[in-house]
Length: 277
Image 1 (cartoon, rainbow, N blue to C red):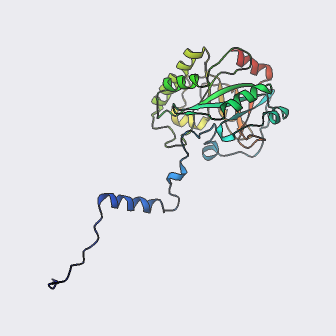
Image 2 (cartoon, helix red, strand yellow):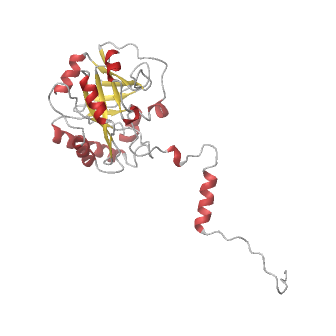
Image 3 (cartoon, rainbow, N blue to C red):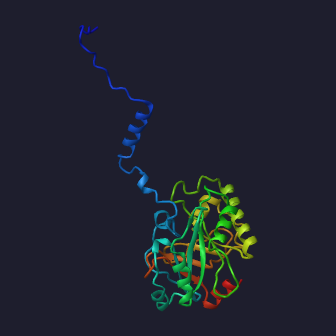
């Protein structure tokens, strides 16, 4: 056994606290190839319609083909686009628009006035959407927040019913930590509250693969809530259970002027009919 002579100091091994060990382990984790980092998670409020489509469902090989009915072109926008060139869109044939109003119960689109009023002023039929975060507050709370902050409706022939944007969670687990039954209950809470406040059934925006994973492909909404389906491909593909047809198809996030372009399944008079309820 080594003996330390008088007048010398024993060299001690560095001591790490439990917190230090944890920090060291996390540091190693985030340097591993492919490891997620906090910078990969967007800031709350920045989510937009279709944000997760390409990452989860991919992108097809071209513009939509083989549509049998007349389709009316529309766009969806959020704070991501900033001030929108509405006259340019109108002149290109875009006749309707949906504008993000809210997210959760904590965010209101700071570009809402320019986008909502601007689309109306050039002649478009327009409406608003809510990006759902089922892990933060109840469906009823979010429906009320939406209606109170731009999500209302009026029978003026120019205002479309509100949209529940329910899709992949950009801030965490794709189903927001809910069971399939729990997600169905949350959606039901939202759409019931929205109808009680406005008299209209909300449009549901989703992707078929997300709907299957997170609701168990629940068929309980097709009879009441119009479907807005997301699929970036040449055909719309399989629809979620309960819907025999789509009302709106978001077919690309790389269209002209604003990116997110959509087909309304019908001529302009059908868009007006949805606005009038």
